[in-house]
Image (cartoon, rainbow, N blue to C red; front, side, top):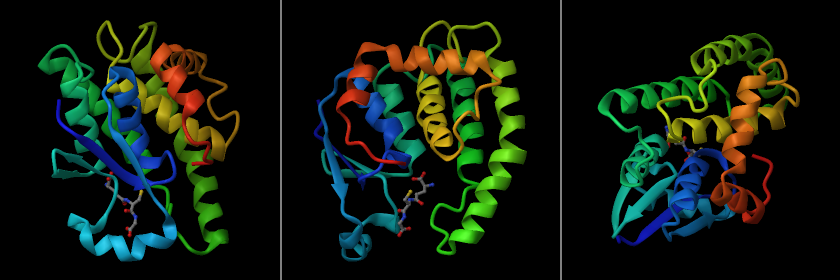
Length: 199
Ligand SMILES: N[C@@H](CCC(=O)N[C@@H](CS)C(=O)NCC(=O)O)C(=O)O
């Protein structure tokens, strides 16, 4: 088993999908959380200057979804066939398109709030309806067992619900999926023990 070190800030953010994959598979890793005040010093030492990164026996992978996809493949959570894997990737990318629209690092609080409100009021409903349609009456988003797409839905919607409580209330199937993911014993245990952060 390789030695894994996940490096990110002390938030769920873009590292949480990997933390879910580690938790579910029971693979040991170092959950290294950088303090904001140390980042300026560390940034130049990180290839491409952004986190999360995952060190695998010293080899550095950057980009949260490349890391997530790698871990999903290693742990059997990427989808059972190439077609299922493509569908799971497509769902992850679709949710991530929306996540990436948020100006997370915007310094002006008024501008930030205005864009957040617009995204949550005007853009989120279309995405949620599309995800709800895609899920339909299935238990999991893709195939007959849980995949990292289900995890990504739970991880991202947890943050959407911090920003706008009640956002998913009109989509009971998506809420039920969220509950199913959070009820998986290893995920429930991780949620219980993880550092409590807003985002
Ligand atoms: N697309 C990249 C985005 C990485 C990214 O923007 N990371 C932010 C934190 S979420 C970061 O490193 N910010 C500090 C900086 O840019 O100096 C990914 O998914 O990993």
